[in-house]
Length: 299
Ligand code: GUN
Image 1 (cartoon, helix red, strand yellow):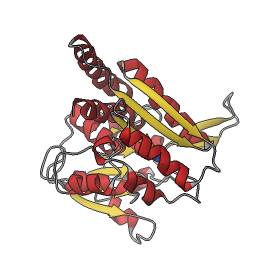
Image 2 (cartoon, protein in one colour):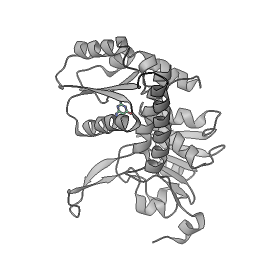
Image 3 (tube, protein in one colour):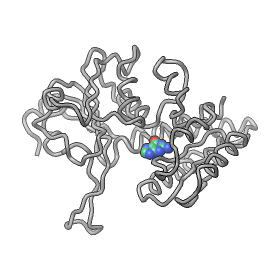
């Protein structure tokens, strides 16, 4: 049932499936044009180490999305006991392979592998995840680069729905290298979407609710299901939910349901716009990775 506030604000669902479909059809048109002009299809490779269930799902979705837009894709799946040297060997091969435009090494890596060493070994020109320190630096300085897919997807979703950001207070909850840190950088840049006053909150933040109650935009990326509740947000806030966790639910046939970092029911009664889980940030992340790969292919 819609609450009174909710009706006043005409609450909007920021639909990541519909928006990513618009982006993917634009990419497909560009691929068709490339192929018609005699060029080869963009080619994305994904390196997956071990059998982490979530990573298997994410990489599977990325490979499937490549097919949908007409990209070539390669999956390099290795067992969890692979050595660091072997991983670096794969990275060196991908750097040298002219048929590969861009590639990702799915994170997290097993604990015996030094993630920084692997990310540093990726050729920044093929780093379509935007995780290489050179690309992170370029992003911070607003120079041309590959933006990390999840924050890039969120930016594109805000843009698609013409969400006002200039002068707004954006509270990002979470400071991971993949989401929280780049999200904060992008939201404070002098561009649209951007020009926010940004607060990055994290596990040591003491007055979180005081901060979120002041937020015009909240990006929840802490990985704790249903952490952000209605009492933590102000009326009319824009809510971006990056979390996606399986939680036990006996009422479901599968025995589980997917929950975001936001308690949808209480928050959607007060906010002006919200991303659903699933169907919000996730599909946008994939569409952004495809955009980066197309950019890499075009050189
Ligand atoms: N693990 C969680 N998100 C991502 C992502 O966007 N890229 C990679 N490589 N690993 C991830």
